[in-house]
Image (cartoon, rainbow, N blue to C red; front, side, top):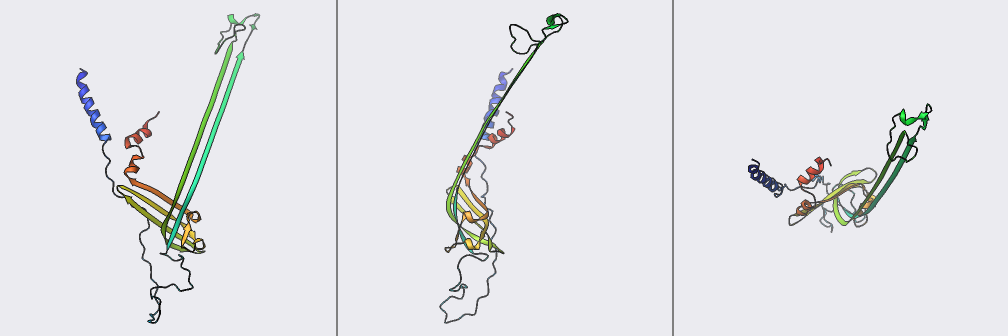
Length: 239
């Protein structure tokens, strides 16, 4: 009676394994969360001077600083992130206790004939106790975390807002696609206009409220994480 159920069970198991091992569904291309392009108001140019050697579209003068200071200007961010963090914790706790209670005589007679005794644990050869208890508890825990990040590159960003006090909000992104692998780098934050160097660049360590994202999508990224069934079992497995 049980032999006829073997073939259907094996067939269902094979179909389940094939379904779990199938190729993942191709997801649509993800775009970095960058602020959409804004329309910048162009300042009115001065009257054309046919005898001038400067172009009419050039608003900067010989004595004007060419560093970014207006909305829409480009600022190059030099990423020099090199962080190391390590944390280690150890805990050891031991506790041991014992209690012995003994009645050698009661009403001028041996206690064994009147009181039922209880003995928990090893009993001595002489002087049997009425109650002998003992307890032992211990705790040993060890934890250690270590992380290192190292990023060195340059990324051009745009000035989104100019705030009072010389503060500027910047944001920029870069998308690199090689074969079937796409990498994104996004930088956001606040900088001071006086931190912008003469070559119109600023270090990433000088960005306030900095948000630096570097991630990828593709075959390599999919291979670096477990499958959906493994993640499901990790969440529901009680042991």
